[in-house]
Amino acid sequence: MGVQPEITEDLANRLANDPDGVTRAALEGVALEGVRSGKFTVSQTRRPPGIGSRYEMDGFLKAHGVFLDLRLEGDRKDSETALAFSRWRSPPPRPHA
Image (cartoon, rainbow, N blue to C red; front, side, top):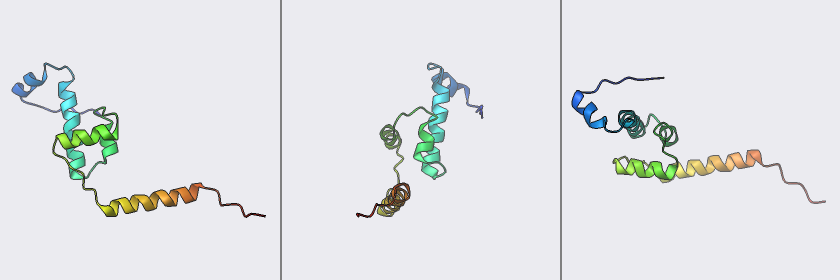
């Protein structure tokens, strides 16, 4: 899907020095607001602006004042999910004869 935002002439002139500047600024803005509002996950938002890794995305978010709400309860839930998945994927142990 394409979006064509309208911006003022002075902002367009500032961004015009970099041919991809307007597009990049728009994608970064959407990514930042999406994570800040909780509408998007970090993984969903790092791909469009071309941020290669989770580590780079964390740095990008911190540089723009967006801090993730990481709590112990979330870690617990992630651990339980991973454990349940590993049990589901692993074959049952064989009894010793």
